[in-house]
Image 1 (cartoon, rainbow, N blue to C red):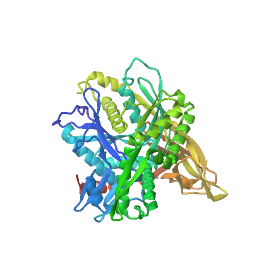
Image 2: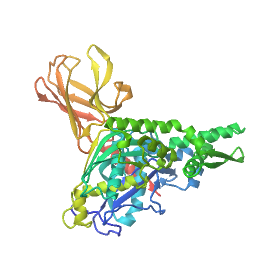
Image 3: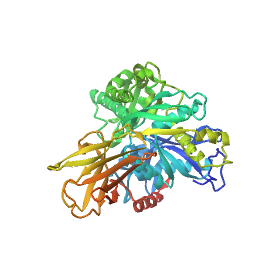
Image 4: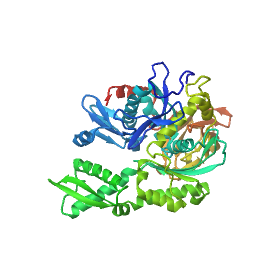
Length: 536
């Protein structure tokens, strides 16, 4: 970061400096924010005048990509042209979309969304080259790398990947004046309940005037508002069938329309006890009444899953729900009344209404970006020295959301494999674990170690995050020779590994092949491919 790239306000910037922004790359909606000259985290409206941009991509002919397209365009498009919920596929090497002889990975599709956010904001802010991008706390290493790659493909220098609950806590504490030099240094504990369109996290955070510390977290990257919408669509479809109609889920076109209508009905039921779904089907107009009670009964197990996770996090942190100072809601799906009722029954207090659940994450990312900027900007920064000092006083610490382990085998039964956890989840980071292992065969020329994320011993139930190979071993190593593995997280949450052979106490060379990883050559290719798309 250069000394002349200070965070500025909202006037057009015609200098060579650039802005560092915060981006919430969401399943359903995305947004971009910046900390203004007076210390307010502002979400920047898109070209349509909305602070939220739908994370929906419509692939059109001639290399055109519509991000947040009009509903009429979506409804008329072929199913293979519509991409929704791409965030759920981040880090999935098996997922790709084919379009006009191009293979579009989740990183590349997400880069189109980021490109739209950037090109909408630059007329208001000036050049944007650096960004903090948020991810669910429960994202594993491949998903985090994929998010960083998406930013790079979009032409951004991703200076940090920030956990969404941490971002929300920054917004909550900053808005109340409790963060950054406040005289009240009393520790406060809040629960961040983050139910977005496609992912769910719950995180316990403790903060003082100068420090924010995550104590425990858990979540589900395949649970979110789209699952509630699907349950409501099933409810409507069953009513259509019960009244003698054909199943509206049977064809892609009718299923898409049913889903869109059900999504709107779900939102209506947050404010009303009864609403109706009007659906053109079977050559006629069908209208189905749905009630909040019926919808909540249909989706009760989904809500219970979030309660189970919430109770687990509280237990891991060793506190009761009544010990919380506040509960912070993040994500548009927290608008469902059942969420608030459940959390109040768990804690004895209603959740906070201080934050906008759909803007708080981007705002927190902007605050975090400004903290990073303040540590680089010298005297004369445009946001003012008082604000710079306030930002510089803030520190954060996190825990890991997934256990880190290695695959080990039994010397007498090489087919038996299991996950040996070296760093349990919810361990404060930075952290390092060093352990000794032994060779299973004599005179090995290399030792292949698989790095795993997961809580269980079953290797197949864990995520393989990379292959770790120790090579150039000395000749004649006996069975049972010791190898020392060092495994850890740095302060930014990045994983590092190292190894050495201990018989001769000679360091061995290490080659790391990240599973589903993208090297610089592939990133350059993706960047060129993304550049072929005209994003509207």
